[in-house]
Image 1: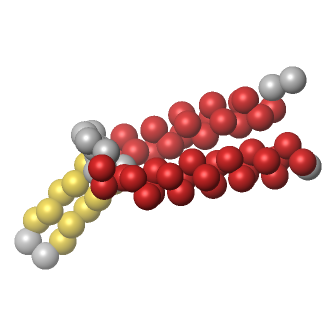
Image 2 (image 1 turned 180 degrees about the horizontal axis):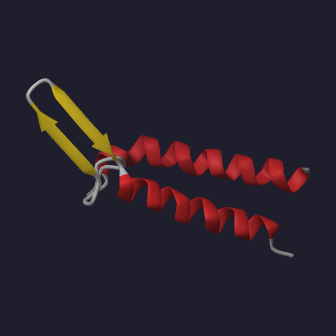
Length: 69
């Protein structure tokens, strides 16, 4: 339980730092190359596939590091 709380705290700190300094990064999280954005007439469709893959990889690595013994 203690490890999970520490990991959650570290994850929240990392997310907070990313959100704070995201405007200064050379890329915008959520608007990465490879994200699908279609805008026609009065409709728009946005599917952040690259962002989803990046978040999935990061979370997989974090959870793998937490569960490693």
